[in-house]
Length: 295
Image (cartoon, rainbow, N blue to C red; front, side, top):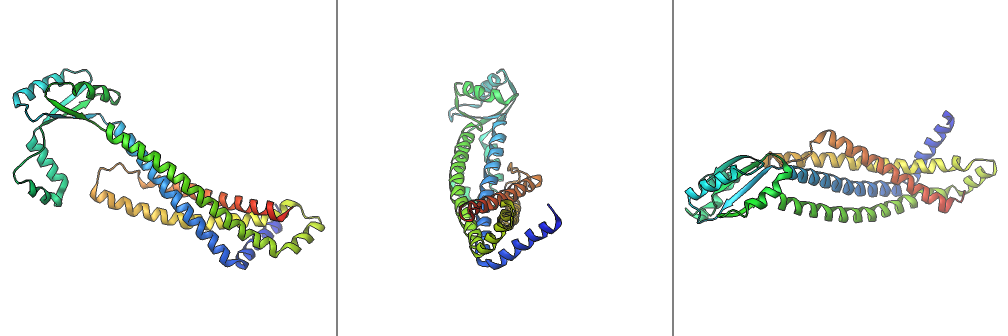
């Protein structure tokens, strides 16, 4: 592409944006909102997947004993647990120790336990560490059959709910994004259509003097891409700010929460959002040109 031709295309793009300023603002705003929602759902799903993977790789089983189990019986159960195949470590956690841990987790909110008076509803338990993640489910099922064991819990229940929630979020997010993408395409198409209509005589003259179809198309395609780029940049800035703020709040209260680190995660999200915005803008322009330009 020649330099003079490129200059012509760029000049036409910015003249058109200024000519249809309000429609351009509407297009940029719609793209920004659509891509912000898309980015939020994308970050949410990816973090939930990371959380599920973290739970899936968990190799610890919490074994809760029945209230009637004596300390002597608990020692027998501990011996049986240590003899199981795949068990690396067994740690006894008394109900008193469990209550102290619970108070530490509550932090400043431990006053909520005052309603219990001196009652301790927590059971004695064992923390069983398994050598490999793939053995956890089988080991938990076997342990639950032990006499005196009330239940054996690990990340499976939480993980199943997490996967189900992730699936619902994906479906809802995809549906919402589809609606927003159609709205964005509609507004960008109308913005380009106004430009085409205002320049219909000029376009007809260009065709008569031998201008190629792509020479006529390019300014409109570039205009759509610029609208998409501007909207996506707004969305990317808001997304980065929101994720950074959210991460700080989460780490203040849940230091070990398996959140995806900001870098290079936010860089990847920014690239996806910007490319998506430009693609939506180009598609919206192409649809408008094909339907109304008739070149």
